[in-house]
Length: 79
Image (cartoon, rainbow, N blue to C red; front, top):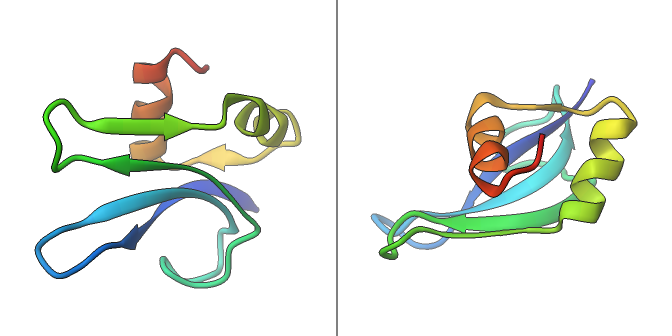
């Protein structure tokens, strides 16, 4: 199953997350199909940048968001 989920980038004690489309069986930081945004909780307020068109396209194709990505989507108004 294809999932929308977070993959970690950034240095030690400075996490920055990419929102990616990946196969559900791949590792957290493993092979990705497409990068559709990024999220940085270290800034105030948190930085959330999402490609809404691509995310809606993947959701229409049946991709399932993880719980964390589902929260990010709801804060940005994407359902």
